[in-house]
Length: 90
Image 1: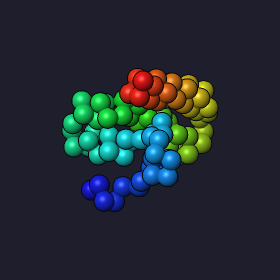
Image 2 (image 1 turned 90 degrees about the vertical axis):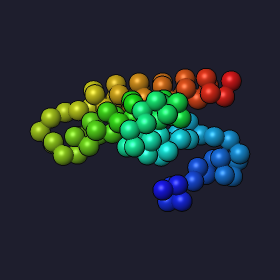
Image 3 (image 1 turned 180 degrees about the horizontal axis):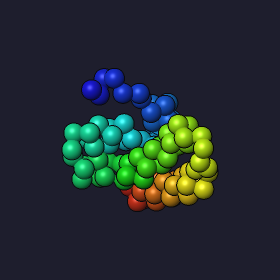
Image 4 (image 1 turned 90 degrees about the horizontal axis):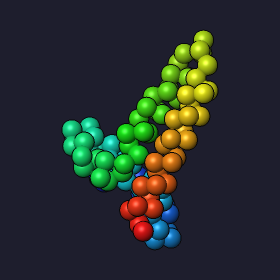
């Protein structure tokens, strides 16, 4: 499965991991049922899934306004990504 994953361009060209490094691998681990390993690899995977779900609902269900939820989950997801990035690297 790993040969089909997209490379991180930041890591490839600059040698620096980005805030989203590990997302694809964590998603694969999550689908395999390895929940702890997915969290260890990319802690924001558990905030990213509800965020993407609500964005999907926003496209499907046009009768409701999901803007507040998208903004709230986006802020939470970004905060988890930044905090986990700094914990991992510093």
